[in-house]
Length: 402
Ligand code: NAP
Ligand code: MG
Image (cartoon, rainbow, N blue to C red):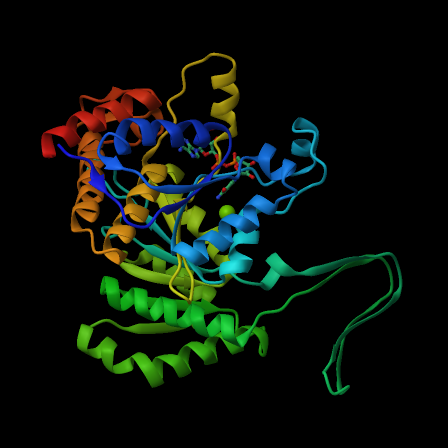
């Protein structure tokens, strides 16, 4: 078979630890033999982020703006322990945070479902998609540890000098304080991204905030969603026979647990961070959740929802065999290749990515899987394989399909 030619390069963001190893295996075993792979490579491994003073992260986000589609490997967000381990110049910020601040947008999380693995929540017969607003709130906050008695105020000084002032609290002793923000523009593009995705996937859209308690901040989210829905999407939703439903966040949680799934659940930034891990775990494994950042300007960044799987990496360094699941990282690659094929009008590229996904799902449904899934699968003849062997098994099935 002749290798599939690409037109525009993918922005390739390499990462850390176990996922960095998986990254290279996926390319060697499942992509390069079939595609004349064009990428613009950025090494977002922690060592190189440190050496470039994190410029490489910014460069990779700018390249995503230039080319439109990126695929990203999981990377370490440094904490105090990592600063020591890697002898870092400073505690660099989360690369995802930096990238999202540049691209703005919404993160969509989608579970990869396979027949033999039933969700822990028995009523969930359809996948649940999560849309996480990727801008602001506590992820771009200012915090103060209050040393003792004093008055805390919220002060806004307009460009014309006008001042808005609100007392937060009169402290009688030590405590903590936080200030956060969001932007109408960012919430609007979050709303549009969600409505668009729901129409595209023909799913209902659910959204919840705590607007009864946060009567200005959260209420603004609710109002913006409703205005945009009424003005731009209502009729299209009716035609597509889907619906938009708003309720309090706690009510959404209760309803989701009792539902059959099949909806897109729009979440504010923090809710999305937490709830996507809950939904992923309930569907089986963190390793079966994919993630795509969709920017309002139409840029896409694909990745796995999980991290660098540090525990497995340390085992690997000790020379022990690991059985790390590569599905979500593989689906990041196929998602990016499919999108590139679609944008550059290369049907053979999208087609290949589709087949690769099918081959991977077939492998698991035939009983060949990594350890994390073996604990969950309802099959009698399960063959547990290591990371590399799983990819080879996928390749065998892929060859048969091509
Ligand atoms: P993690 O890497 O997602 O792993 C947590 C645990 O989940 C693992 O120890 C493993 O459980 C299981 N798991 C996750 N992915 C798996 C896979 N592909 N196959 C099998 N099991 C899997 O989260 P973490 O340990 O909290 O974080 C590790 C590093 O990743 C941190 O430095 C963090 O900063 C970074 N991180 C990066 C991103 C990102 O780049 N998007 C996201 C989250 C975290 P068992 O140990 O029980 O096998
Ligand atoms: Mg999280």
